[in-house]
Image (cartoon, rainbow over all chains, first blue to last red; front, side, top):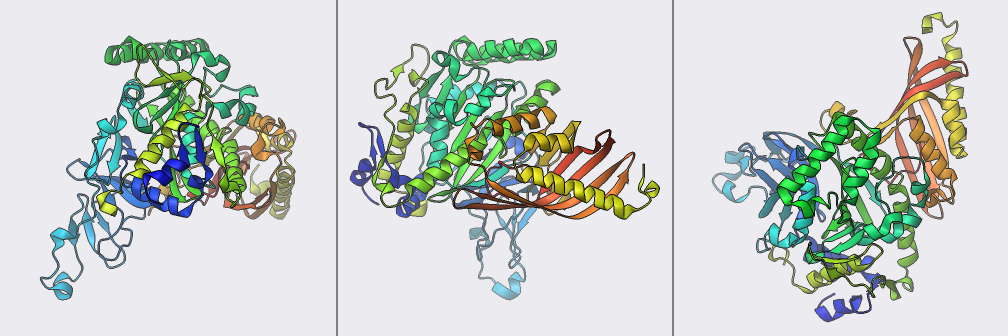
Length: 439
Length: 171
């Protein structure tokens, strides 16, 4: 797959059609790992997961396993999890604290700043011919933390994270600033495999408000706390916001509806909870101003390429989801729940339990999504199935307007503008050369 | 009651084993409301922690305040059962075919009740091609009620750190 022409034919932005091939073609998959994953700012973890020097977690950047570690001096670094001698993983735990990463194959060891610190029998085996300075762990050249969210980019020539996020940062700031004690990830990473192309999961978060009433229809009918206090039944309040560089928000309420819904729900909770909600909003006003405070919670969305999120309320979890590409039609879903460290204990508890019951691998929302992706894959991977296009024409008549107060293009809730935003960015990056590191 | 007061521990083993076999039959049939009724007390805490890979075995099982896969009370278990019965939960319509294997039962007295552990293998086949196995351990706390033995705390420790699929099955 090469050249902008061929890719342009796969993503038809004027008719809003996307070739099914981009979800199932092995060659396209290989190219997008090189052209998108090796050049994008990818989420690798949150600083609250590694508070102490020597703390680490492992993750993936595309198909490459990485270690995110706080070195002995306190700096957050990201390394390819692979010994420079013969490639063995130097860290096989999912998390922990260590002074060194020791390769169990031949015993090379690395300090937490990535330096090659020990080579067994170095004098006998190498004499003076091994330049240990040159054989430290491969470090991701660009690492930036934003609100504790650590993003890394293999492309040394990539624009800054600020430039990459563009006007999406205006909205993301709301998630960063509302928690009084900052965003704090609960311990544990939940992982499950799914039969799906990674883009099906990304676009589901990026813009698929339309699947909620039907796919998740059963959830709305149960007599439980609703996943979102402001639901699609109040859809005029909710908007699609199409942001820069393929980033998407799909459930934005501008007129303080989400805060009001929280306060309404909190009538049945304690005074402490109501006071907490007031404080959250006051803090947003103080830090970001009244207009952004009126947004209060972002709903759901996707930061290109594969960091999805949802947060409907200060009384609901902040969920973060990463669909790691494993094959054209296989992903590994990694997901985390974040809380406000300074929220009342009762709120922290309801947030944690809510995440498990709705968004976890067993969650009543997650279950039906997996069935969709599996059967889309089954019905689309055949040679005839792949000759067709997916239809993203919802929103052709309302492609989005500038908002008088807020950035991005704003459109009605039921819209596929964001999916097209995602695929437009995808096609742009696929038409550009791969990062130097993988050329 | 302690095991000492039981005339024949073999009889107790048989009784609990039959409890599990009857439970499995209800789960295999998708009779989830009956399953909840026949298995759990009103104050059931049904919990499955996240597993992760760590040199220290204990640290590989995440704790109570950490991320979990199931963390239900009776009300929410009932909501899940209602959802499956609603004909709107298309992840289980058509229903999966499930088979439960319960083995290696160990029983200890625990105050007035029992603490049991057993190994669990659940096989799920679904539609034409999907087939997954889930392997793990149940740790149950039993209490004697007017209706017979019931479980008031179930911890399911699956062996998987990466689940083969999102879960539509109970354990």
